[in-house]
Length: 263
Length: 263
Image (cartoon, rainbow over all chains, first blue to last red):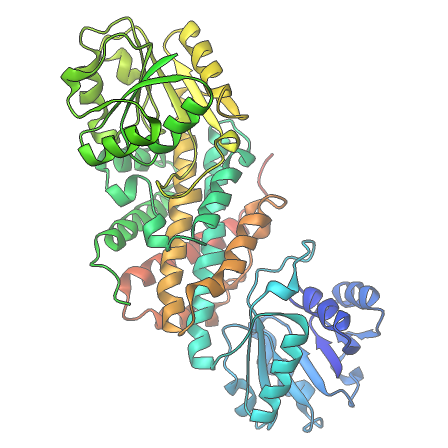
């Protein structure tokens, strides 16, 4: 597989090395940012460019790991005159229709569901990868590509992937934001953030064996109004956090008192 | 130390065995629920009672691990005629003043900051324990007691502990609720909840090395309005989740665009 990697951000900087390590040939890296492009190209020991007109034309796969907002226009630019190649994006929230709508025959999705940061190593083999393509043969190819880097490969339609990506936003981005708000409060107690780490770790570990609803503890699940009111008052100078506190507490209580989940 | 344990819930059922294992003598277990009391008493091989009038009167410490809402009235009931003993509670959100206000000379707090579930073993030695007492000598005693079960013992005033407990609500209860809401969405994608576990684990692991603000990823931090609007639409039939989605996304973006944190 000769692959051109478009993007040099959090996802690309993990996916590129993983693909190369699995024996695929990365022939070029593209990014609008010369700094990001050169940094990743040096790591991969491949050429880079910041101009789409300098992209090679004989790759098998053009793999787009760029911001959702610029994805469509970049695909349009790159695909012109390269109709035979396979165009693939890694965006959890974007439908495979983005390729169909551009009149492309070969389009697919390769969504590795993880939170990537450039400086943090991840074990790609453990990352669930969700693949999909306009053509069955392309889907088989993407499945194979995915299996070469991960042990957890699933086919998933764009329709279903929307909900998966939304669930990832809750489980990752929103959970991390809870940590960020916790960090502000722990600072007020004069303690370092790391006193929270055993709690954060156990909260995550718990849902390996208990479903999250059953794992819930704390004042909101009991709807302990005294505690809830006192805690809201502590946030009097932070209406934004008070608002989050209130909505989350109500939502926790609503879920706790709902009739058992139908299964 | 001769200790009477009042409560047989999530905290007591972990704290009791930890104290016993450290060599302290648990002389009695009390709970209003006979089922809970007897279950814990059998595990600890100590007598239990469901009547406060049957509590022994010669213990050194009466340790209260009960719901915040019933704590004060239970302390009042138990303390009558036992003025020389040390009365201690484990509630993160309740001030040591609860003892002072009842006219007691010996009162203290022993707050193990963790999310406890009866059926899930925890390593007590790793749990941060925060102690405080009305009298310095009692505080030293509680510090010693805490060190016998945990390697992470801190003295903390009630004033500061309020913020610590609030941070724990964000880091644990609210983060877990994000998992619970994620579970509902992943079900719509037709996939099992466990596809989210690598993401949940990495999100928690990340904040060991990056501060949560720096670790944030996803559409809200970029304020990618297309994605945000599309995802909100997916929640059209769930106004409660849509509301949480909206507030959290705004709060993430607000934090991301704030001037760098003063340190």
